[in-house]
Image 1: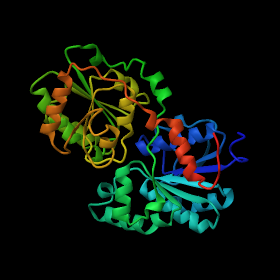
Image 2 (image 1 turned 45 degrees about the horizontal axis):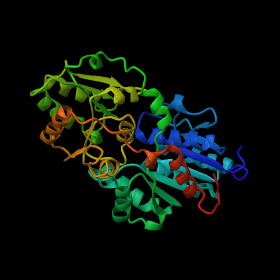
Image 3 (image 1 turned 180 degrees about the horizontal axis):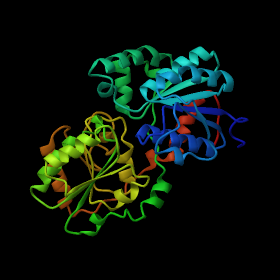
Image 4 (image 1 turned 30 degrees about the horizontal axis):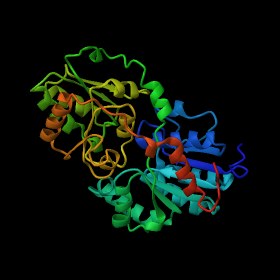
Length: 373
């Protein structure tokens, strides 16, 4: 317990699982950070599974609701809130946010409900009947939360314009990065033979193999790049599109130059040693891997998708931006970046500093409390 945590405030964080996505990583970082500051922290999960289970601090109490689907966690979460009555419940991802808001109402407790929006609503909540239903649910229930924290300025604008949320309930807070941990882990050897071939530069992409990341665009761009020069592509991550992407790699005759390595607990050594880091996303919220690549000093090319990359890369000052779904433009910029002799400059990471972000979150979780650090 710390003297500054007002005898001690109780924070609960709710997430469907601890699978290897950006939203889950942020929640683990925040939970660990709050606990380090002396808060009483519960990490509530619908199902305690995923790549980040081993990264949760021993100071954080795990509450496993043992449900296979997020929607089934509604009543167990309501019972948890009624029994534990935390001061605040922080959740992320649309399904979990809706469940949190409903559970808070059903529990009839004084728990403050704060939701996080990590992805662009104009992309993730539009297209197909399932997204239409989810959008209407978000439009109905999000305004009932006490606060909605958005990971970028672009998301704040979209939440107001598309979901009719009042600006007074919207707050932009960037996702945190643990720079000290990154600086330690990036010095490790990635252990891949391609990094030992100076004649074959390594292009790296990191992120879940999902529609949003648009890896087909990257593979087509890489095919165009390979037609003109030697290069290798390493992709870190796993997800539902893995089989399709591997099949596409075969069709493009890239099997010898593309390696899918799945989820890696230390992607930073790859980021530190790659010749080029590429983000090919069709849409994002605030891509944490782009921030991490900056922290590792990587040479960067990113699609200029809605919300995130342009803010992170300061309108292209810290990395090249190209149009989405344009493999020709992406290939051209990748070639230019690999041919550049300009050394990569160390980036200022203050705006993404973990301690700074934690403090910003706490000011929203406990807005009427004068907390001094």
